[in-house]
Image (cartoon, rainbow, N blue to C red):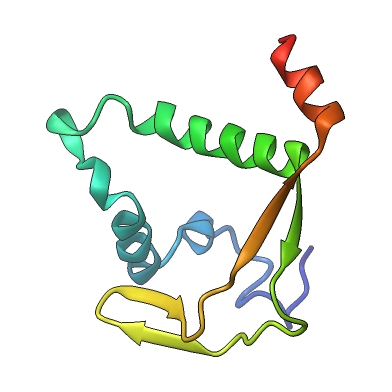
Length: 106
């Protein structure tokens, strides 16, 4: 825990070393920009994040995903504030019938 290779002045009590740098806070703020912030922020922001996680989980559970083509090109393109793939990934969902019978009974 008091490794001098990992910490500057490891024997001194400095709780501020665990605070994130200001640059990280700015990046984190941009991730949630579509929901606004403060008093007038979207009341459904947390609900939407939970729903997206649930929707992705159900899609993984209910479908077998096939990739068109043999190899995925991971080349990236950065335009404005968006990072995307140069060649979009094309997937074909194939339904798993046993998964649909389970989720329909919930």
